[in-house]
Length: 147
Image (cartoon, helix red, strand yellow):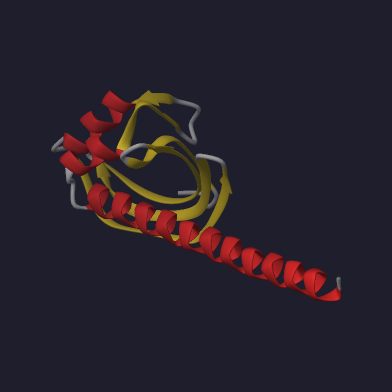
């Protein structure tokens, strides 16, 4: 009886370690996905952005605007949008079944429609897992340092 009990405890411990490693590797996959999203945005790789954004994608701006997927793609393609630098730090991944929320800090500067911008924002990215992998469903960014 003691042997069975010991064996069961051992198997539970092994399963717990495996589940913890799976969660960690999934968080690492999501972090890499967000980096590829940022790289595509920073290099104006519209084909990748179109593949990454969910069909129902929506962006909630720090000024209260609600923007569609099409609106965001138009901004990326606009010759009046010039991103000089951008970096995302402080990533934290919150996972549940088929959905992830990524909290981060995004700093960037450039120009849009002739106006210079300097953003320092807290951002939340909502990801959904589809057959083809993770997709960006929505984003919300709030300015945390006055421009």
